[in-house]
Image (cartoon, rainbow, N blue to C red):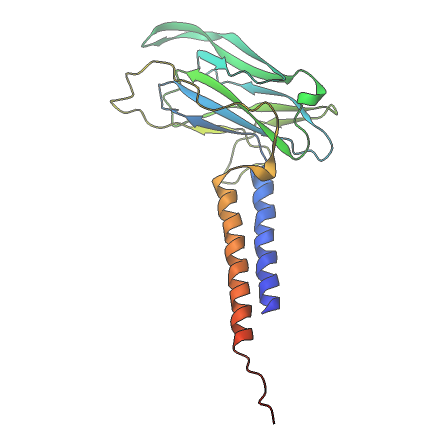
Length: 238
């Protein structure tokens, strides 16, 4: 029973390690992110380096499916800069012709204390729109560390396999009759943290499920051992 229990625990621990490595990338998620509408983007930025802290993140916006508006949520200790650029060819939209778009958004730590230490992560929020009328949109990102190194998250998936440094990709919900006519900018509901967060304390659903799985396995092992012990009867006294 002990060998079975140890094997099960080691197997689950292996799953945890693999899951941790696979999820430690710069990623983007969204709230109210519907095609053609406005929504809130959240960029999750972990420091993968074992020795260096993240000091800056530059996110590049697409020019072929331009986004014309972006406002940043204040982040204590960080300075955010929104850059715009001219479109090579003006585009006609429901709101008129546009010739400029949001080209980049950059977050930079004001000092060493605000940087994201190894093994921790931070989240940066944006209210943007109108979003492209496409199934998804990619946001190549450049991550800077305080030792001078950088990581360029700009690779596209090929053949279903995830590359080493995938670009953050946001899936957009299809517009419905109720939402397609809405052009109001949403209220930012994501709360920016004034300090960095431990990657191991993330409330990610996947982590919660894995921890629950471990607890369940350990409970089964303990119950089996107790059952075996209770089945043993002492030898009759002569």
